[in-house]
Length: 292
Image 1 (cartoon, rainbow, N blue to C red):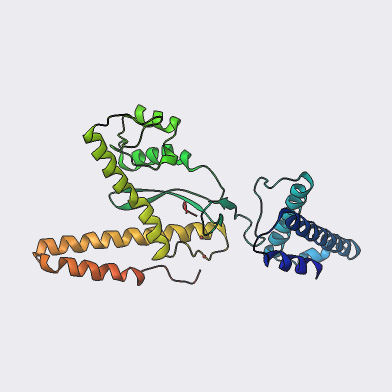
Image 2 (image 1 turned 90 degrees about the vertical axis):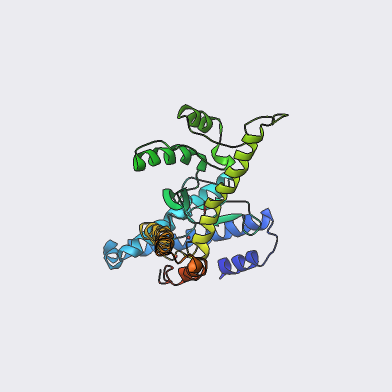
């Protein structure tokens, strides 16, 4: 009960000081150490045949609990706040904390998805449960584009995070257009045509942000309930697949009305068809930006 009371006392505090956090961690570590020692002593007295009663899920949770205890003990003794592959959930040991710095939540938990959009269709190029720097995805995405379509892309539109010195060199070496602000001090006089291209690129680059918002709001990409990482990967891919299917069906419907000459009903039909997205969304039976 001591560990439970200490945890409740901590979470009720709006502002958690370092001393209170360290005190609570110490209590939790001591209780876990005592419980693990009791468990091992019990196995020593009654032989290891009791392990045959454990299921594969029990072994997985027990292994995650032992590893998490060692990680927390090491961080407390060395007075550090991070370690490699830190476990935050016994039932989902593949989850990692990702610092986002948002007002709503400073830390998020889930998969990082690196996606690209070509002609309105979304491609999931990188999906990882570890916290990594997304700037490394740009080269991978350009190579995947060449592999899919057999040629290099004509223009790339990416956020500032992806446009470091190394990525800019790679883009320039591939002779790919990129209308973004240059590094360093801005020029005193800017070409009107180049400024118009940058404004257009900023507007088109918003598609990728809208894609993540639509995938979360309509296709429930922010509500992945699968426990296993492979199942969760499939769930996330299904969310973007359903979004691409809706994009294809909308285009097919537009083409149908253009060929039949019923353009007067095109706008109203497309609005109604967009409303069907909730009907075709992923069901709630199973559960995660870069998006997390």
